Picture 1 (cartoon, one colour):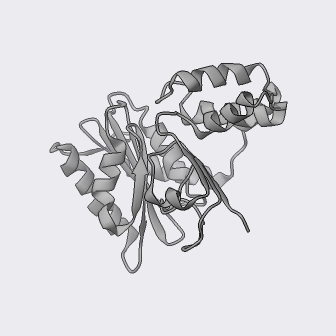
Picture 2 (spheres, rainbow, N blue to C red):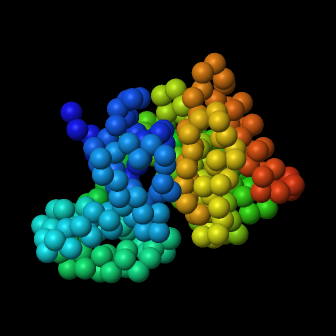
Amino acid sequence: MPVALVDTQPGTGNNALPPGVNPLIVFDHHPLQAGSASASFAEVRPEIGATSTILAGYLLAAGLEPEPPLATALYYGIKSDTLGLMREAGPEDLAVYHHLQALIDIEALAEIENAQVPSDYFKRLDAALHTARVYDGVVLSYIGAMPRPDLAAELADLLLRLQGTRWAVCMGVYKDELIVSIRARSAEGGAGRLVQSIVGDSGTAGGHGTMAAGHLPLGNRDPEDLSRELSQQVLFTLGVRAEGRPLLDGFE
């Protein structure tokens, strides 16, 4: 069966493509991976802020205006990936975003952005806040078991909003992997380089200047011990020597 990979690539660890299976099509905006050469067609453009921009660009170039449901999905994809055009958005993202804006279903967009979440989400949020430690502009957090793999990224985005924070790193366990999500305040931060340096050959990793992720198989390792080890590697790599303090220090 033909397989298309969208917003991911072979060998990155964040998709379910079985080993030895070559995708037919790859669309992505992350740095090019060697495995994408196996696809019959690959459109990988790291200079673009969102894969939705690439997909919408094909439709618009063909003179096809997406219907409201599709336009809304593409618009939200650009908005969420670029934090409302504030994160690594380029001229093409800006142009497509504003073109789609006139085509979207506003009520559907509001439902997506304000979707209800299960109580477990707040348990994980509580864990992220209570385990978070602040080290001179760097926030590190471990949230334990996660119901979905992208929760670490969502909470890393939240922690980056802490005043004075330059880096936010959130780790959690999904199935048999420790997932590491990194966010940087500056586009020159090198989040992709940071995650690759701490994950090394022990797993898969990739990302951009401001956002990156890594996946490490746990094997027989204790996830909390591994998260502490990686946290120390993050601090060492960033040259942070300050003593950490709990984010919620002084709060009951």
